[in-house]
Length: 125
Image (tube, rainbow, N blue to C red; front, side, top):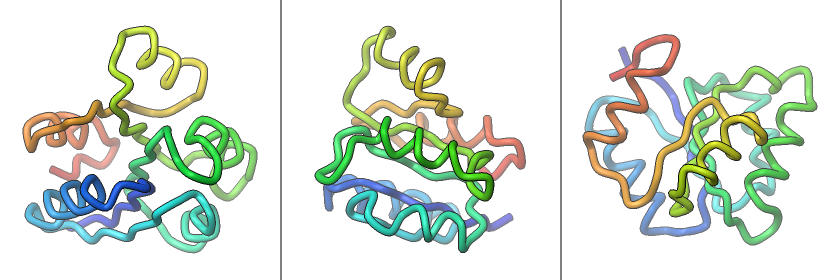
């Protein structure tokens, strides 16, 4: 089943890699280069998940995630933090404190992406 995803990442390389992998398995992808305008996209569309980078030019992913969770129309959006921050402490912080639904470490592979997609409530692999 084709689903729609949003990628919020300032790296053109990372956006291209992730969107290419998602599109290869039949999904639709929207892209934001920063958090500017991303909340409006999330509220205005129905995404299976949002892939959110932590290090962004305008505000960090943690701050954006807090903002996202504070709005009633976006509070339940499934969010996957996507970052090079890969220690257990950083991953736990992203999920437990920042309230992300999952965490994908960079660099990722098709296999690690598939493993994250398999955890989505609607099984979109």
